[in-house]
Image (cartoon, rainbow, N blue to C red; front, side, top):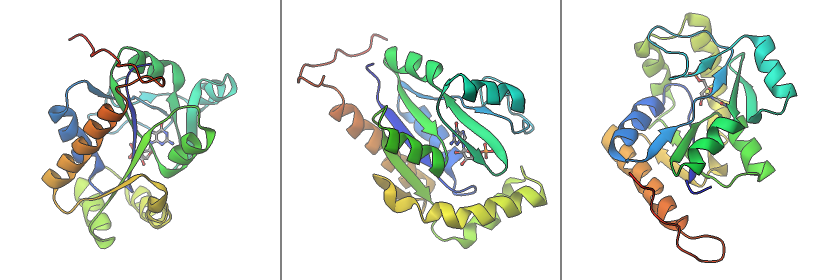
Length: 202
Ligand code: 5GP
């Protein structure tokens, strides 16, 4: 495997999606891992691009067959990272971002099957979460309440992460995220016995 793995977690409404999209535009050779979920697609979301949207029984079958590197129940739905798609991207030399919740990050940290730098994105203050979540307009009232209730517990997990980015301004947050990714690339450019890993061909 020659690509590096990065985990990014944040409570809903912290600005994570915007930051990640901009970081993807800035840093070449960086891709998202597309997760599986049982949540219904939002307007504009595409199967295979934003998520693989699957039925609960299909998801549970994947759990049973050991297809996931990690999976969790988040805000009442299943979400998981399929191992096969992830390793295929890493093997091709891409650096991969896992946009996963605090439970998924904890599983990867504890199981030690894969090495990843983990990054927590927090809003400048907790009260902005509700405002952003409402302005975004993607959730119904019940989902907003679930997400806000979960945000407090998620924020308590931020000390477990290698890096904390506070989203004071989007541009600074994107610069910080890209800096962490570039630093990871510099760190991971050698094999365990110190040999140089060749650059990926374009
Ligand atoms: P959303 O429904 O807003 O797209 O995502 C809700 C939460 O699920 C976010 O915190 C997101 O990071 C998390 N999530 C998305 N994909 C995965 C995954 O594959 N595994 C885990 N553990 N969490 C995920």
